Amino acid sequence: MLAGRAARGEETKELRLAYVALRSIVLSFLIVSLGIGIFTDAPDVLLLVLVGLFVGGLSSTGEEWILTGRGLFGRIAAYQMIGRIFYLAALLIILPVIPSPITVMSCLAVSVVISSILSWTQVRGFSRHRLHWVTLVDLLRLGAPSFFARTLTTSYGQGAALIYSSVVSPHNLGLFSAGDKFVRATQSTLDAFAVALLPRIASSLKRHNSMSIWSRAFTGASVAFGLGSFACIALWLSAPLIIGLFYGEGFAEAIPLLRIEALVLPAAAYVSTVTTAVLYVLDDSRGVLYTALAGLSGILVGIFIVVLTGDFRSMLVGVLASEWGAAVFVTFRMLTLRSRDHRRKAPDLPDDVQSGGFAGSVV
Image (cartoon, rainbow, N blue to C red; front, top):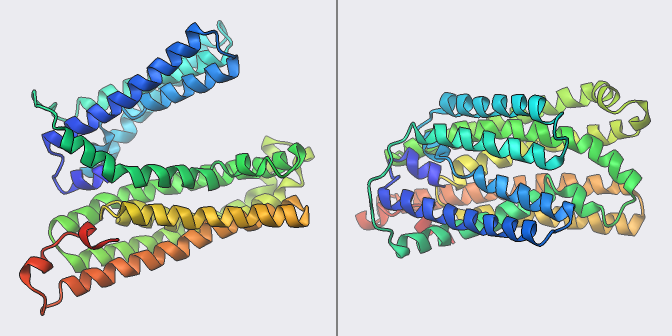
């Protein structure tokens, strides 16, 4: 949402300062949690989780959201590549000397800091400015639905294996996870299209060009669906090669699972594009949350079927229902927003109603 505001030239000093303050508060909490884990001699597993959370917090310290809003994707990619190259070099040099999971996470932390610093060099630092708590509270109110939506989306997306682990055996879960990793990796790659489309949609909103907004929105969603379909076909055809190359003949049972799960890619790419490039740009955080709830309902259906039938392959029904259910709902949401926008800008409406923002009409 903030990237959408940056695309409209709304990255005010107050907004930037509030966002920096919010990230600093979260990062401070993660640092304190990690410190407590270290000084209390926490178990290695818990300590690694705390380190991972801390590194995740560091990944949000950059100003990539402004660069995204400005469409400077080449610089974002360059900065990320510089950090990743350092990460790889550090692993090759340090990991053989100190072979530990903490070493891996520490190298990743440094690489993330490098990328974040580089992003700050491309945006003007704001001068000394007083933080208004009202701005911070407004930012929290805006981001809370998106935070919960992201949590739910992760649960039925990348976290599907974790959810199903309570109802299937480790062996069957391993077969499912073998193919699931490639599907989710492909899905993450397709998400880049949605990010690239975001500033184009936001620029139309800045010019108050309603026709251009919805034309680009539906065209972008159609292209995303096509890209997802192409990725689905490619993954379907290459499934035997991928499984055999990375896992060996012992995972041959994972091939049909991978092929069936690949069918989620058109829907996943479509949902990602509409959510990122349309709902976020229009500040429709509730629509994002409702879409995530629709997806979560699909995974609950899958769990019910697995428990009822006892067949672990039934979990694929839940995976498909999650993504395609979210796709149906997000389409309905986008059509509703367009309809409300057209009614609000109808010639017979008063000027003050016609000039209202999108988010104000969204419930």
